Image 1 (cartoon, rainbow, N blue to C red):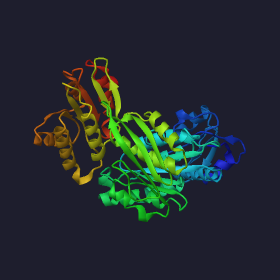
Image 2: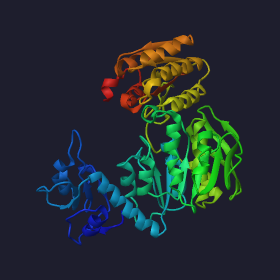
Image 3: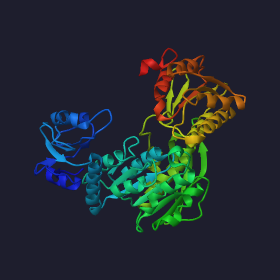
Length: 474
């Protein structure tokens, strides 16, 4: 954040104490190990770790103030608050409001899948035009959104925020911290279905983003998703639409892809077309794998064009954009020729379908495609059926499947229903041993599951070669 006094930080956070005009900032951290000279430490209470136990460590690393619930002996200013998370949000809200008064423009992105990839693309596109802050990894909740916002400084022109939701009202609340000038809704899928109860409930929650955009802003909607396009009546903002399938119908700004092609690693090229508020036709060649990246790129392009960036700058930045977040369709070629695709960061039915379809397209002459598949979490009562369908899909695409997790048997059942080949394994070491056995130079292996299974260690071990085990990578 821009440098404030300790007194100003306390006022913005709604804290008592901190009656000092000494400077505080620029960093605001919740991990004492990340404290820097002048930083503000937020002492978050937790079930296993209490941030108050680390105030002295934060002070030792240079923190000058702490948002905390109680006083300690640590040698730094104690800014006392009844709720540290609420205080962090209030501080971010105040800092963003100050910056917006000086010209900061904010983009919010939500959707059931693709949020992180899209914000990574958009962050790089906007940074080609002016200083930009975007989230690291998936900082998309009540902690991550304000921490990202507090990274802005006096020179920041654009702030990109990724908005996740675990229920109704969450995106509305996050939009109160970072009020969006542009709101992007990517899709409505089955992610977190167990928390929302229905796809309609997910759509209702995701649409809170466009409701938060003012009439002077832009609502950017995916015209290929009827549930997303159906959000148009919920916003007073100017309407922009994008579509990977072809020219979208409605919208003051319309963006689409023409002449789409893919190389052997499923990296797509296309002509970025736009009509309405901006007329353009610019070539784009993406570095990320998968046809779903075309839609993500179109979403990023639409937001950037709505903000007034020149089409040539947008297309050039998309072509130059590289992966910013790990474990998302990460290509890991081995010296012996085997290609491991690490897509282990998270999983839901939609992202599983996209990953498997993409990797099936990478099949090499004479080679196999192997999939290490684990649980998709938070799917609710339909979980078993969704995992059976995942197995059917993988078998139908020709994968040899290694299944792991609580729903491994359901995955295996689906594979067998489609007359495919499957092995159920008990743990990650077994997954490495089975998936890594007899791999040939022309084989491609994909690893994917929800974050809770930590299958990145399996991908790392497979990429290390035939003698590695998951236990060695922990």
